[in-house]
Length: 530
Image (tube, rainbow, N blue to C red):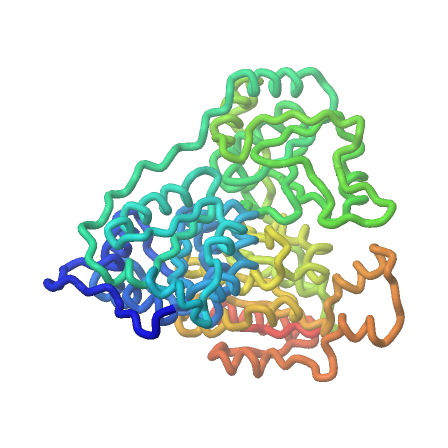
């Protein structure tokens, strides 16, 4: 290796447009409005371009996992991609867990990952890594332009890839010199492929099955759970007596009063099998057949009963909303169908706070058109049905199982819908993965109310220890699942991030705190000690 190698010469005449400028301008032209960023040295020209090229709102995140999780939440609520800005391979790696959740949630996300200048790679500097391999492990589409003149075209392709149904993760790796060298022009927005139409044969087969008798379960996933197809699904059930289901961890669903009844599948595999046992067929709309979250000794992982036939109305990349409307027409479904009445639960009597009481209070006080983001796991899953007759709302879940996703997800959802209240239901163990999201909420003055369930434990893992037949009462095993000694102080943690917080240990104190937080503007946190 030579001792001294000069960088390639800059153009003698400075251009009005460098690669970073062309990238930002192309993103704006393609409809990207927000960038969740945790930049470093290699991304400084992109950072500078945000001042020169208007149209993108930069949102600083103090950890890359917050940036990627926020982009997921933003995408779920808008249906369009935000951009993340990440620093080389380690920065991308820090964001991969929540990109996994975004991928499983079929969220459109565009990652811009700065990397070393092309001529600097050969030196194997400390931050050198195989960024492309990292990106390919989690992305649907990856590109690495080798010239500043190619950046804009690749950016337009990245947006198109992210917006391809049902939503994809696209990653553009930007070597530093392609950001600062001369570019030609921004690229025009590319046409986005529309979801593929569902074949008429699939509609005919589904219609015949529904009208032939027998009990049908319809499993919905994707935009049909919050789009026009949801009403059509309700009409189909009114005609045929079918039952609507969604996955346990669905990306987004419209819930509460005014919606058709959609039942979430249970979390545990044996409970799913028991619930579906009485059905003769399972009709999939943008969904896959249910499987257990993990394998367990002596338990079935395939969760469709043997006697239950599986039919597919639409694949995830197909237009399920149109297919449901056409199916409703094919079976002559009524124009309207019953919907859930507004009948939230009564507030519980005062006493020590429990997880069930906390959910009843959330359901009772939930404002109309709120967004509920839920990662409470053991504290919320058993009681989530309390929300079914609450005020109309959107419900977001942890799609990929990578914990620590909901604080960032709530942050992105609040950026996407500033006029709506976001209620974040989070466990104390999960929250420690991405508590930096609270700082971004404070800085951006986002309307997020976080209910922090403090059970001082990885409670779900205590259950898993038994289910995988590894039960132990030994101090070493139990110490790895316990969050005492010292106990986390979430009031101090939140206040240290700039978020007002209060602790509640009784039902009355929690109800009072939630009312106050919902009435206020900006982020609030309630540590619910259960």
